[in-house]
Length: 454
Image 1 (cartoon, helix red, strand yellow):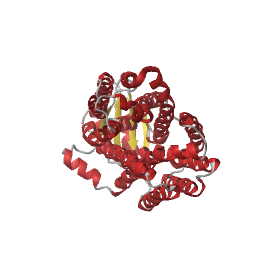
Image 2 (cartoon, one colour; image 1 turned 60 degrees about the vertical axis):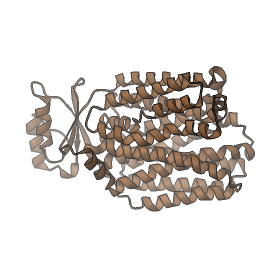
Image 3 (spheres, helix red, strand yellow; image 1 turned 90 degrees about the vertical axis):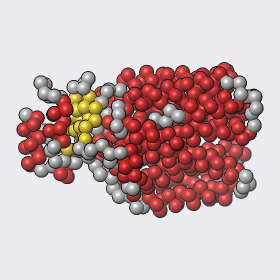
């Protein structure tokens, strides 16, 4: 069960994600129409204004994450949120489409998704990591649905420039949420490497690359589907566009009801690989249902619901698995590559969704998406079960220098990382139980002055 510190930190960091995504997603369903009011606007420039955010995110995730493995993560998150808020303000004050494009590019330059996830990994124990990541994944999914419902209403109320001001306000509120997250100092055994060496190390790891392919495929399919399915909900389910948020929200909530047990099973019984592959299978099944049943309202919604269940399971498992598989000294870097893959997947998904609309053959469109998911499943069969570490919470020693104490801890075999929260006077000790024997327990008891149950 999560302790109070973990619950508070998970709430704060999930809120940061949700506030950023809410501001981002509210623009998407309205800008293709509202953007025509800007001077010099063309369809191509309107599309660029929407897409440039994801492009700068994809480019800058890795630089931000490389820095986050060397320096304190919280200041980098603050910098990213300031850029996000500044970009929103520039877009809000712009009269031309070029000003909006510049503002959106600056907002996207605050590419700290991976840094936020790495910070969440720091302040949660290994055993509680999947729950924390699940809550973050749910906050993203919920913000997506709420944004698609609120976007048209808010635009009607305050206009498109007002909507950009809302994104700025959300960015500033997100900065204040960091006050709930403890300051941490990370200690581990590995020596610091050069930036290029560190990136190469991450890119050479086969399982990490499979996870990068997974997040790329997941968000490609999600984005393509949200471009592709609205017209089918209108034509075959007789649901007007203004009511689509009311379709997505209950399906999302139902999917969370089914997703939670899967996440608990994956972590508690160490069935992560099996649940992961089953979730991809669920996505494939949902897409197959839509190939053959898209003309029926309830079959279409059933396939969409199955897709949402599998999507939410994957959203929770992917960052948790990544944090387990990534080298401890390069955790943020690995998450940065993963986040870049995610945004590239969303970019190509949007392009693909537009192309599918030109086919005028709905079954073939769903078949193409199904084929992509099947290729993803075949690639994912190569994944090995992730390494499981355990966490022990210790009070910091009185009258002893913290750096000296952590160095002594890291010298003990099986202790992989020590995350210190000085203000709370506690430390999370991450341990590989497979390497713990009686000699290690004696060394640890001698250092701590008491027996520790491992």
